[in-house]
Amino acid sequence: MTFTLNAALHVRNFDVSLTLGPAETVAVLGPNGAGKSTLLGIIAGLLRPDSGHAVLGQKTLFNLDGGNSHFLPPHTRGTALLAQEPLLFPHMSVLENVAFGPRAAGANRASALQTSRHWLAEVEAAEFADRRPGQLSGGQAQRVAIARALATDPELLLLDEPMAALDIHAAPMLRRLLKRVLANRRAIIITHDVLDALMLADRAVVLESGRITEEGPTRAVLEKPRSKFAAGLAGMNLLPGTITGRGLTSDGGLDITAHPEDGAVPGQDGVAVFSPTAVSVFLSAEHGSPRNSFAVTITDLEPHGDQIRVHAGGLSADITPAASADLGLTPGMTVYFVIKATAIAVYPA
Amino acid sequence: MRPVSAPRSKAGTARKTNRRDTGYTGVPPWVFALAAAGTLFVLLPLAAMVAKVNWGQFIPLITSESSLTALGLSLRTSAASTVLCIVLGVPLALVLARASFPGQRLLRAFVLLPLVLPPVVGGIALLYTFGRQGMLGRSIELAGIQIAFSTTAVILAQTFVALPFLVVSLEGALRTAGTKYEAVAATLGARPTTVLRRVSIPLVLPGLASGAVLSFARCLGEFGATLTFAGSLQGVTRTLPLEIYLQRETDADAAVALSLVLVAVAVAVVGLSYRRPRALAAEAGTG
Image 1: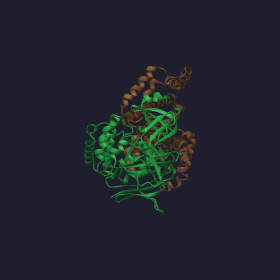
Image 2: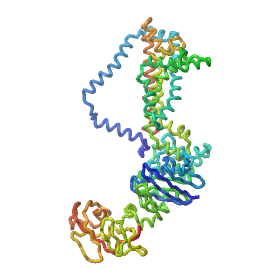
Image 3: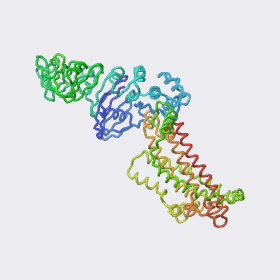
Image 4: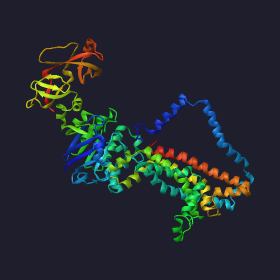
């Protein structure tokens, strides 16, 4: 009873293979325009890929390989989609909205309303049953939208950044709610938020430019990122390159001194990963082995918690405001980023 | 279109108050002068007509047998035409707004043609289609049905000229509503017919209502196509505009009185179309 997907859509430069276990929740992370919504559109049947096939349990969602043109329409797929906006039908009451799915599936009015009440209670929105969607706050409406999706008993629940449009006060409650309802349920959740991925998903997939660039248990992806995007999510600096005997030569030509992880073979593709807090900033080159010192030009300075984050040469460093003031840092300045060899992790990509 | 967190009415009031408070409209004064001229241009002829009404004879004139027959026929045929406009126009608007196929722009242009076509030309075209010697008329007549110069012809002529009004306003409403709600409904397991019935149509109900009202008004005023295609037989094809035109030759007072009736009906219809959509929109929570 797994879900397997293999789909390509050339106009969007999209080519993805993905498998989900029976009760697995996968977080899809990636920059804007990476194809995350395309992925959900293809699974839900709102977009038709050029080629590929997808199977959900016993059901073949589509098979467009080898001259086949089997393509199930969205309403027969059992893949409810929850978008950023709740998109509650404005002309129906909250109760009728949640009863919509069961009604469409052929349930009679009474039992559909009963199902609706059950799921409204489940998302702690029972008291809104008789309201119109226009009378709900964003967080309340999104809870109702979750109830509406769950009321169809979907075999696969698709969530497209369900918390992105909510204010910061509504998000934590919704996240708790999703954690509860997603347990023992198969779901794919698109998110920009590391916390969502950690809390809600068993596994994380990083999608970049229409391809999966990284995939694994959420913790592992964040602790040992292999892609620039995952490193950014985890708040780490990442330099891709080639592993050498004494560290790594980055694609940009920097020689990095560090201890490659056991099992890393020189000549292999690898990444050097280090935290911005491990970077010291100097105005002149420092040469005390075993240290790494790179001349970089500051592009931006921004507050980051109680630190100042210095962006330079595609890397970032966190220093104290006092240090920043002492050094007189301004964008355009050339400075030296210095990192201890022991603070850099080098492992195969 | 998307439901907002704040209740609609509150947002609406805020906007209105704001406009009143600032008082700045950005409209140059001479525009107001021209707008006043435009208003006069529309109202003055109506006033001139009202001034001509023979009030002493007004009630007898509009309750004469021929007048009542014409009014009844107009209302009945306009209602039937509006129903036909909805039956044919809703699918047309859906296809134009939602589907994409080669020749779609051309189809839209042709559907809208009666808007700019002189009604007489429409009448002639209908005559050569459904008339006794027409393209379809011959086969229809074999089945024992004659359309030209019957009440059916009146309904067809009115539908022909009024259909674009419904299609235009409904297509606009459908495009504004977008496809997001429909996509969600489909992923919730609703088949296309269910989506249409329970989501698409209810969401564009204000647009459909105003389109239907406009179509009805256009039907009510239809003259040229009706006269050409249906003729002017009392009780069968002589609608109110035709009756007015006829009376004008013999009894000017009757023509003016009946014109006023038509104006009153038109004003009522237009008033309805401007109030209903907004009330419906507020209820549906859509813009």
